[in-house]
Length: 194
Image (tube, rainbow, N blue to C red; front, side, top):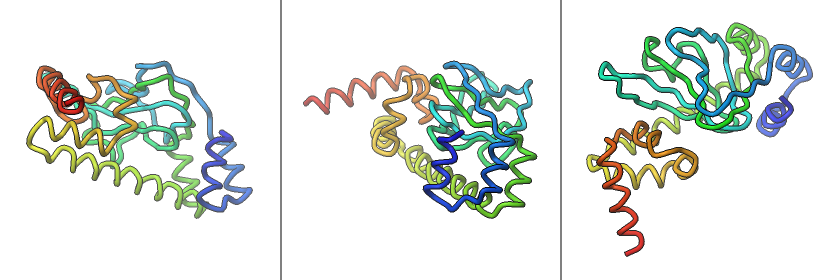
């Protein structure tokens, strides 16, 4: 919790009342690597901030193909309710790529905090803006027609994710089939080591 409060204070002035509100309603939870936060059967009406670790949201297509829509690293938020980050409620999952510590606040309480404390509203707006910037970068990556250019663009645009994610997660994030991914990887290392 202190880590989140310190992060908040470095960006915005935080009143004692807003801090007390966050401390009263926030709970810190630790999740194992690959544990799910939500699945279509589980309702988790919380707003969350990653304190340490990595979370991601995905959907499953009719053919069972996973499509990762976003990642949330340290001091990035996500929610267990339908929101702008969620393409469709049905079939939506949130999972942890690493052992992850999150700050969890009931969504209804976070809405209350947003209404009563300007700084909470501003922080949520700032975090949403950062998410939208990451999504814009992802759109740029996905616009490359060739899988090779998509992969190179991913490495350039998301260097931290490239080192923190496994190949299957990368494939599902940048929409490259498994055999193509390994062909692209081989080409990338061959060109790089020339």
